[in-house]
Length: 416
Image 1 (cartoon, helix red, strand yellow):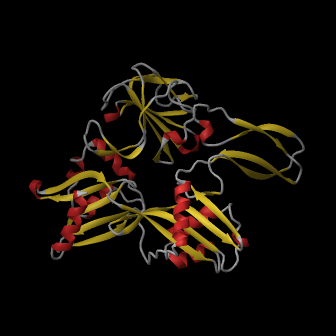
Image 2: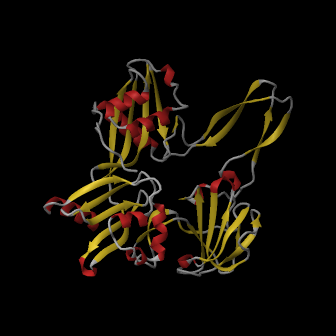
């Protein structure tokens, strides 16, 4: 918080200094950014290896801030690594150079309301009402597959409440739609929206959905229902989570906030570690603060990481099967005690492993009928859990009763 406060105060009260807002270019590296501001490359060498690995998390289209003096020299910069953490570069006169840190992003989070009168379609009318493309996109996603937009008529209504983060006065990350009310003539439907922006009319129980396919066959057989979540097992036989995945966690050793791109499992030293899926070992050795590490590449763009091991059992280039012992729990590297730090990447980005790992990883199967040149519809079920649906529905009804006006954002460049 202190760094952002300094940035705003300097921009406000120092003559000639201004805050500029830019978009990170596709393919740009942190080294290229430093060089563009005539900062010596020794600055990067002064950054710890532990922090240097996070610099690869800067992705295209991220919005970052710069504060420059009246001569155009960089005074401060704030560059996001994720929706929770950011790089802070600042002029350090005591060192006759620049300082570096990774700090939490300070943002405001507030609830907003909108009511859309349908004249054309949900996307166009939402955009016209709230003047925000991201909200229009999220509403389109929320009602897709739940409401047939073609059946909407003029003067039908869509109302919804949502949470929007703002950073230094600008929207930050996508809006989080909570509940949508759709009025189609005399019929009213409530849609509850999950964190990914998908809507459901029922929550807290198994919801049926259909999959339609067209096959040229004349027989029936039992086939697996393949999915990303069904393919992965657990890295240990007995699970005890001691620290969860987080974009912002207070580091117990460094005594400061840092991203925690993985899940920590508590276990005794020497406990066997299991490959969560079949794949090829792409790294086996020492990796800085992670200690002894094994990394495995799996199908579908996944890479798993097993850190702090006491002993490694597989070598680079070796192929392993799901459930195979690849090493043993230890406390090597930067660690407070024996445990497994398990990380999982999807297409080059860290994801929460617990959204993919499953204790029961065997594939489900269903009997599917294949009829020659006919559409075959299969009914499947999934349980939908969304927190706070009752409270958010109550808030939405309150906004409607009070005839609350729609919040208008205007022409704003969004941060990602």
